[in-house]
Each structure stands twice: as C-alpha cells, then as structure tokens.
Image (cartoon, rainbow, N blue to C red):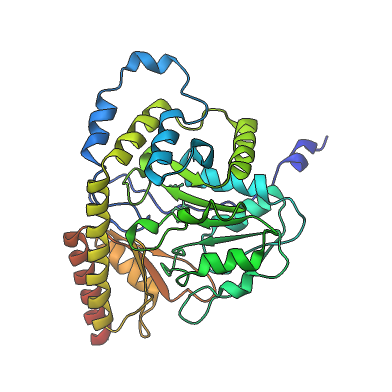
Length: 358
Ligand SMILES: Cc1ncc(COP(=O)(O)O)c(C=O)c1O
C-alpha cells in the first residue's frame, strides 16, 4: 500500500523567525524588539485583570482597543482593524485583497514573509529591484498589478519611501488595486500614511504594537483603511478565527495607547541611539543605509558579515544575517540600550583588530 495521504500534504517553504535563545545572558539584537519595557500603565492593566473574566470570550471585533485606536488617530471604528500581531493582519489582507490573477508587486529586498503568503494563498507576484541606496522607486509599482505591498520603512534596510511617495503611488495606481503600506517600523522617525486612508479607499496601512510599543510578546497589530477594506478584512478574519485578540492583549493595548508620552519618549531614545551608533560605525569604515527604523543595516567592504556575526555570537551578542543575493555582505542589527550598543561596538572593534593582525 502506498502512503497516498502524503501526497495530499501541503509543501511549504515557511518564514524563518530570528533565533529566540533561552538564556537571559545575551544581548539580543536580532529580532528588532524594543530594549525598553512597555508603558507602566500596561503593567497596571494586566495586573488589574480579573482572572475570573477569562472564562468569557473577548469581544469579537477588538471592541475597546479598536475604539481607543480610532480616537487616537481621529478615525471611525469602522476604519480600524486589530489582530494577533501585524503578521496575522498582513496574511488576512493578502487573502482578502489579492484575488485578481495579476501579479502583486513588492521589492526584491523586503520583508521575507510577503512571498511566503503569496505562495501559501496561490497569489502570483513579481518583485522590483531597489536603487543603489536601497530606496524603492515608486514609479516601479505603477504598471498593471494585482496589488502593491511596501514596507515603510523597509525591512531589513530601514530605508523610507521618499516624502510624498505613498501619495504619488496612490495617484498613479488610480484605484486599480489595493495598496498595503506596512508601517511596522514607523515609530522611529518615518512619516505615517494613516492620514491618507480617507482620501484613498484602496489604501491599507498596517502597524504593530511589537516595536515602538514594546509588546512583541503580546501579539497585537492594527490596520487602518476605508470601511470597504476593513469590512472585508473582518469577513476573512471571521472565516478563520473570530477572536484573534484575547482579553489580556486588549487591555494591554488600550493602556499602551493611553500613555502616549512614554511611547514617544522611548521611541525617540531608540532613534537617538541608532543615529549615534550609525555615526560610530561609519567612522569604523562601515557603509550603512539611512535607517529610520529600530535597526541598522550595515556592511563593511573588508569584512565577511557571517564571520562578524559568528564573532559577536561568541560574545553573546546576537545579530541577523540574510544569505540573500545583494545583501549577503550586510548585517541587520537591532538597536538596543546604549550599554548594549557600546558592547556591540566593542565586539566589532575586537573583531577588526584580530582581522587586521592577520
Ligand atoms: C516589515 C515587518 N512587518 C511586519 C512584522 C510583523 O510584526 P508583528 O507580527 O510582531 O506585529 C515585522 C516583524 O518583524 C516586520 O519586520
């Protein structure tokens, strides 16, 4: 008898997340997490939760969190969607909006989950190259397409679209397809496109609580768009799982939104550390992109990125390397605390000294 059932199993090449070591004794600069804790109000909100209430299902539509986000951005509740991390929202959006048969467009160097979702849902896609400075050329996305996805700032480069780029893209697109702007890293100096969703009915802006709001472990994301888009997103969500945002996450999210001063101060601190370290690395001969995200994207003409990553790993400092054409000489280094980044610089200096002595 042949094991016929094996032929019915899906064959996938899934996304590979950054390593999550068990030891607390590492400097973790490999997953673009926030080095600072969530807002103090989040602690109080989670501690104050009545466990007894957990026997009830949470609100199916994200309830209070959706209202808090709508008020924060001056939008209506029907223009806001919440989910179990922005990864989930992006996956639902790919399923909901990319059904034309024409290829969806995104850059060749970008968040590596986009092609994974295309393959999972059978969506045709094409990639577009980036300019030499790793910036995306908005005009490359204006031809016939089944949708456009751009991370702004882009990952793993940290480079933002040019000023007014999203508006130009939307005008050139002329309502032909849905455009998703993935703003996972917008909190560290980029200009958000949330303000454009009323003007362009086919624009979805996706954000996360994982980076600027230091809640990666809570799994919370949000999206902003026209009621026409949000209602379809809701329908797709309700065809998979009615309750992706649990009661604990909802309470934490609301508390985080309420403490705007803390959020802005911490994001500003990360951006200041990023710019200081970028300057120091340039002084050491590295070439860095103009990152507006909470990570650096750096290459040195004389250094093998994999070897430097291994050296840093030996010192308990984790960074990310992608073995992908065009970026194999680069490391993506999340911005940690000032002390963590000083340890990183020390590790790099040590590597360079060994290297020059050889
Ligand atoms: C560009 C981009 N989009 C989305 C995400 C997903 O974030 P989360 O699911 O934690 O909200 C990430 C995570 O690193 C990312 O880099």
